[in-house]
Amino acid sequence: GFGAPPPPPPPHLAGAARGSSAGASMPSMGPPALVPCTGGEARDRELEQLRRELRKANEKSSFFRSQVITLQQQVASSSAPLMGASAAAMQAAELARLRQELAEERVERAALAAQLQQHSMA
Image 1 (cartoon, rainbow, N blue to C red):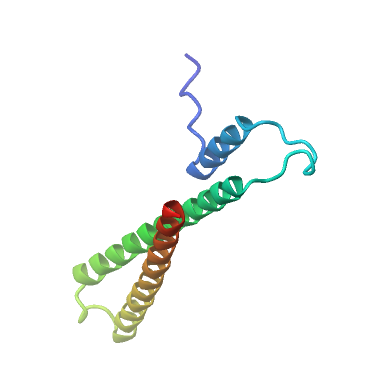
Image 2 (cartoon, rainbow, N blue to C red):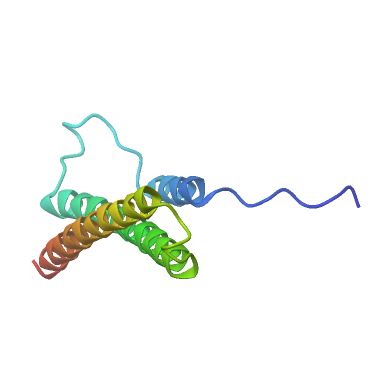
């Protein structure tokens, strides 16, 4: 052998490749006048966009969740008396900021999920 096989593409590239292959299965589009866009096609595109946004929101949410857990573990494992009061306050402020960001991402994800549900039922 000549070493390890190349690593798989990063998820964002793999997603782009899947999206382009799905596009390849559609009939080739001529001038807009010859191939009018139906309401179904517009709806499908909107659903796909909402799904992508929901996936991004889920990825962000899990990233922030892991950050909060990591910081909680750091705070729990280090005893506050050993660390300077300002460092403890900075960690607490960072933890509060990340919790706020996580809460905002969860609200955004819930809104996107509701929007997606609404469109898929329409």
